[in-house]
Length: 232
Image (cartoon, rainbow, N blue to C red; front, side):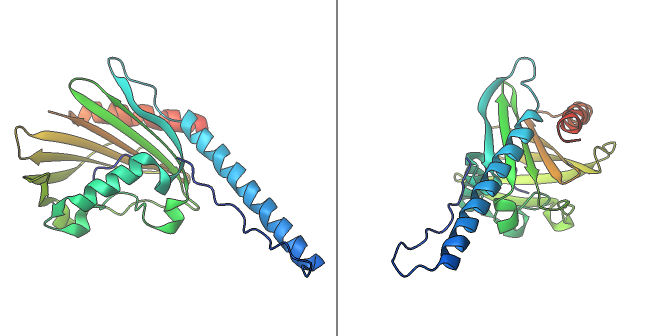
């Protein structure tokens, strides 16, 4: 499974061709299109701002290393960097790259309002992403074949072993995983919480030498309460 976090990218309305032959109906159509585009962009920005308010503040002892960043999910720098890293890695099972995560390459998801922030300390990092989907949806569970696979990252062979955790339910739906990456100088663990509250999906990644499930559950609970206060 690719361990991704989730810049605004608005699309201008098509420009009307200024010629003497433009009819009144064509002018009205162009004006309506421009108005609709502007309204959609303003709405998306407002929704992304609401998601930003739902992000966790910096935990004690950690500093901000990215964001808070808001905008269309597919256009976020964190999303693009994650997709680029996945493309560069040589996976034994390429289909496992985005397993159990939101697929930012899908048009409906790529344009969805999102917010992301990342914190780090000398011992680990936390990345949180919030995405408001067009309609309620939740990533499918991790396929069994993706529980263990290998990948070559920057010339080093890494083995990923993932197990699902028995986390108390958060939001309307939730799952938690613990991944151990073995290879290179030392092993690394990644705790993942994915939850849905209404049409908003949250991804929370905790990276460190050792990630305690109990601490992951607590952080997931804090994130869910913050999300509930912001979006209802």
